Amino acid sequence: MIANGVVLPMLYLPPVEYFMALNKYKPGILIERDEHFPKQTYRNRANICSPDGILGLTVPVMKGSKNHTGVKDVRISYEFNWQRLHWMSLQACYRRSAYFEYYEDDFAPFYENKEIFLFDYNEQLLQLLLKLAKIKTPLSYTETYEAEYPGLTDLRSSINPKKESNIDQKPYFQVFEEKNGFLRNLSIVDLLFNQGPQTGNYLV
Image (cartoon, rainbow, N blue to C red; front, side):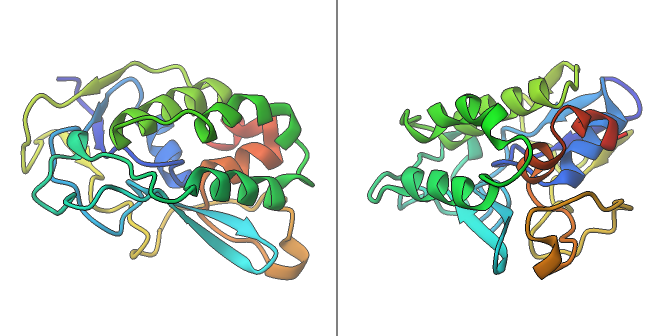
């Protein structure tokens, strides 16, 4: 295992601090895929900037995806059309941003195609986000669940919507900043749609 690396969970449209960690610890990135699925985390939710402040987007999972379910076995629920809701929310919140239309076609398929497993869906989104942010790093994946990883920074629990992030984040322009002020640690898409090709430089 690579020294000075990090172990990260697989998240849905992860927050800025997640990508700061990816950039800081590359190429020593280990993605957790053997944990039990914890509820009410960024694994199936993301925060974006709306006219009324922070708007949470949640990917519903199939009933039975309790805490004892392995994260890679959690199935996405399509009982209601959450994809349409998420896509309409992204359009409504970022249509006025500088780069939404530039990246729109990259994200649209994720709100049309019906992936079965949450982990696979998040992984494909992560690969796209790494590409758009121009972060080149190989990803390794766990083979078994380990409570601790000596020598690695463990961020599996610390990047959490219930915990205040302590990252040193410099402000960037946000669409509704005049109304909301600067909102910290939103989903990476907020940074991407507002900063475009400068996203990678911002994360350094």
